[in-house]
Length: 289
Image 1 (cartoon, one colour):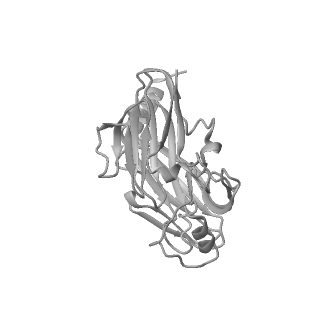
Image 2 (cartoon, helix red, strand yellow):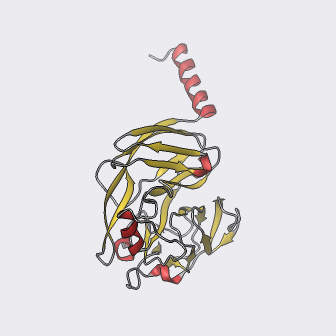
Image 3 (cartoon, helix red, strand yellow):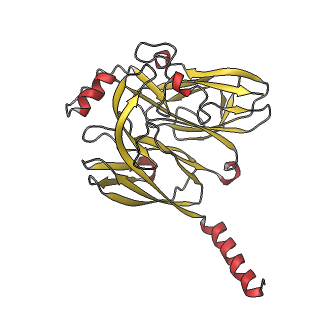
């Protein structure tokens, strides 16, 4: 039976949610494992995963603007690590085998990078960097795709993993990934390859978690920049090419005007190779009906 008091309680809950946003909880685990590239090279790699099973794809942290995420970060390695979101002024040290509860309440929409930053063995260079995506409520129900763009130099990864210091003045990346995968591994991946129909509103989130500069180029379509955390790309611009330096993030809206199958690739052309294999690396497919 619904009473007047019940209606008052429900109304108060709705008002509270509207004014203060929703709250949810999530845990991620910093794991170490082995990344297998598209040319079958095995690389020591770190990633923030949803559980203790290593995956070379970092977990995405997804919020609607106004909401709060109570995030528990478990450090499953034996060494102390850090968890950093520069845009939110979060910098937390977590001992080996320990965990830390972190409250995330972003004040603005956008695509931001969370990582283990450049400390110790610099594990963010070989994994350990993901996407924090904060979407405005009016866009939160749209079909969304994600591009966590990463590069690394294999020889430097081996040096870092063995405890050596490397010279970043000579950086020659030879592997390039999207969501932890190279081109052949990206085939058919529904997270990375936008699929839709003419007139659909498709959101694409992209972030550069590597050290090289990338320039993501769309064939066939333009996209409107909804959110940008970089001065290189202006919010509201309508473009087909998007430069991304380290730590940059973009949220773009693509509304296809025609059917077709078109590539999206990196205009930094070395990034469409990997380990001497071409095509490889940053190479996605737009499939519009």
